[in-house]
Image (cartoon, rainbow, N blue to C red; front, side):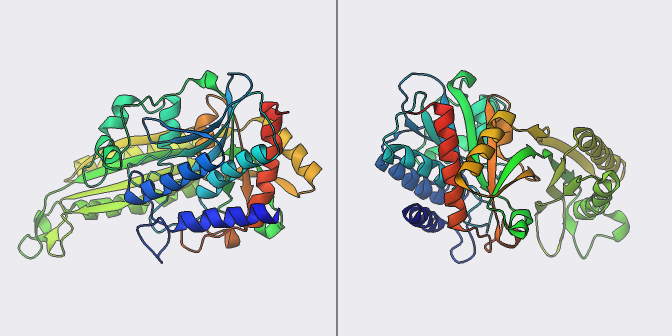
Length: 408
């Protein structure tokens, strides 16, 4: 166990170096220089661990341990991008877990009947291209080829341009045949306080919250801050602020874990002495109850559209819609059985955050394990999880992957 913990810590330390904001958290946007540095490291480790390495037309990375049979693979992994000024564990901990599951296979001399694949997914956070879960949505076909190539970041750079800038080929196949996937396993930090408070190292995720993400554009008229009378203004930021102020009440009114968040806002032209002519912001709506999520989304759109009669033009684009997801009962039972056999305390837990597992669950059997987050913190530089807890989860995933691949 000590050697495993040391390897996990070394992986985490190395990946933490690949950030655009040194000493201010991890900022690793998809197709950035830091992405390239991280992917080169992950591919190097995959090669060192004896895996067959490839990348698809999205930039997802796969490290394959062939099986005795050419059957469907058991995938183990997570994502390796980050939010701006995020932490070192959200995503990479799960990729590292996949790597170490593969190493345990190799060190044990096990030959899987069905292939094992370590997977490192791109753009789960949606920090560069919006929407999130892009790597898994592309694999499953929920994000079409045309829609993927049409995406642009806030600087107007397309996915194709960004991929080519770091040597990736956007013309490679993206969608994967679901028949090539037997199961998907993902380790993730909890991003909440429950496991730490209960002093339980492993949470077996039963379900994942549903989520909708909207991008809203408010168009007004720019003008001089000093010479345009208040009565003659069409201020996009004032309208956006009025809209945003109404949204929290929608989540509160629905209750039962329904939440609504405006997390990203851009003002144009963003000058101190210019009346804002355009504002773009995101709305994130989540609920364990799909009906409540749909209703809050409808009410949000109604509020937005009402402002088209108030001197501005408001348009809304749905970037992402994922229904609440119940994960595989069969694999959850396997995870629970192996926790018990290994002597690790466990609990059933719900995820209030979205994960790639919810996308892949639509095409294959999928399951997740959570490990504790210190003080429940995530998406910040203070994010931290104990490598010993990651190591325990790796052993649970290893035993589960053995069963799923029917390794001998």
